[in-house]
Image (cartoon, rainbow, N blue to C red; front, top):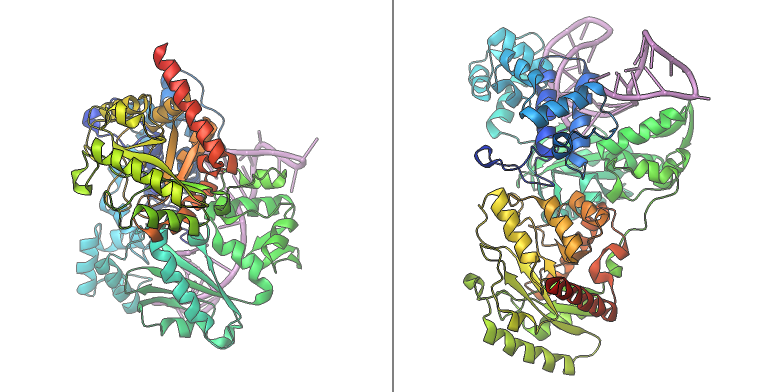
Amino acid sequence: MKLTAVPPREALLGAPTPTAERSQAISNDEIAAVFDDIADLLEIDDANPFRIRAYRVAARTVRALTVELAPLIARGEPLPKLPGIGVDLAGKISEIATTGNCALRQRLRSTLPPGLVELLSIAGLGPKRIKHLYHDLGIATAQQLCEAAQQGHIRHVPGFGERLEARLLSAAQKGLGKDRRLPLAVVEPVALRLIEYLRQLPGVEDAQLAGSLRRMRDTVGDIDILVTAAPSVGVTAHLVKHPEVSTVLVKGRTRASVVLDSGLQVDVRVVKPADLGAALVYFTGSKAHNIAIRKQARDLGLKLNEYGVFKGQERLAGATEVSVYQALGLRWITPELREDRGEVAAALSGRLPRLVEVSDLKGDLHVHSLDSDGGNSLEQMALAAQQAGLEYLAITDHSRALAVAHGLAGERLLKQIDQIDALNARLQGITVLKGVEVEILEDGSLDLPDTILGRLDLVVGAVHSHFGLTLRQQTQRLLRAMDHRYFTILAHPLCRLINERAPLNMDLSAIIRAAAARGCCLELNAQPQRMDLFDLQCQYAKDQGVLISINSDAHRATDFSYLRYGVAQARRAWLGKDDVLNTRSLRALKSLLAKARGGRADAARD
DNA sequence: GCCGTTTTCGGCCCGACTGTTTTCAGTCG
């Protein structure tokens, strides 16, 4: 579990806006970034740790909001009362929203060299050591740190020594990034292999996943594994002997951290079986959730740590997660919800939602075949969908403008429609719907004429080009596309690719509100590199009454397994079965699609 | 900097590991 309080900088409801083309107010994400920056600066300034935490908490709170604050402020409306944000921070939010900056940040920046904040990202360097290095040796950048270490100066600073000097040099040179995050689906198999390896050691009772991997976050920064065994079993010694381990960061009897050849960090903890429940809660996190339930413990006069729930010296619970939550007066909270976004209050009052499950999915509405850039035939995809437990799938090959994917022009699509009719006549227990993933062109028009689109069961629209439009242009483009009478689902709305392409520069909250008004659905694309939309955005869509379609975007018969990741993301968004379009039976789906189309046609006539 | 049927001041989550120290500070999760 990664517990550094540096949240992802991705844009949520509104991508970061280039200053040259700021046609919209400052986003919540940008306000949060200012607070995080202030917290970094305060750390180096050796400020009160609780003041620093207040800024970190405020950043997280603002980032998690589904309502944009700047427009509210611009309209002169009062800020809603937010937990952890008092008079001072509310004032700073207004200041940032109005001016784009904050006097406190400017003052701190003017007194500290800009490179110092960077140094915080070097493993083993915290604010105290940075301060010492700056005062004694004038070190203000990673480069200067390396030079001083190579010349042997650092070992002479009080509190430092030769070993620490070597460690810092190594960390600075390797740039052992604390911020590197990989897609869940990439990390999961690595973690499962390690778990198998640890289980093979005699004396190990069990090994389990914890951390953000267990919470099924879309990206994972490191692998957390909990092993139940006696400390004498030598679990950490076994771990460091694993052939994929390249660097040992720390190794004690009950805890070890290593880096794999792939650059992934692995943290392993060894606990006694009797402590497993409390340890699982603790190491699953998130940090914010842990703080929230510890506060709940304190409110009850109890103490919670990784060994159990305690009343004075007496241990009340700890063997199972259920017992830990129960001792705190809470229902068990599924790991996907453990982000301190209201789940503790819901568990306290018995109002935890019943979340969507993989088995609730009846179909997949975004699937490709050999006709465009898929790897399998229509029939193979249909049979694979059936094998995956689905009752229907929509074939949605690319349209003509996406030539690189052999997109279909009208005639080829009409031919595919006939083939699907023939296939449906042959197949039993699975129904193939006729669809298309139609290109949304630069001006927001669709790539195929109504005469073709009108023949389909559904139209999935997507952007694959012109990612660099301005916020206003991109938003207008998508709104115009969704306005089309046959438009059904907006596929991968952000068009982000994890670690490769940033989300589109657009006003997503406007898109979501428009989808609600027009009866369109939004996709939660479950391709591991996409995972598009984010959880909070799905939650906002749900709040606005927009149905989410969890689709695999399968290009091969094996890709239906991705649906699992989409469902996990939906669960993190508090979505229930009814919030998801493709949990509907085929009959209910068809009636819903017909109604949406009819409603849109009526609206067009008005 | 926030917060309050203990409190408007004095708390604020808790423990393991490392390295530099002779009992603990700093970092990390």
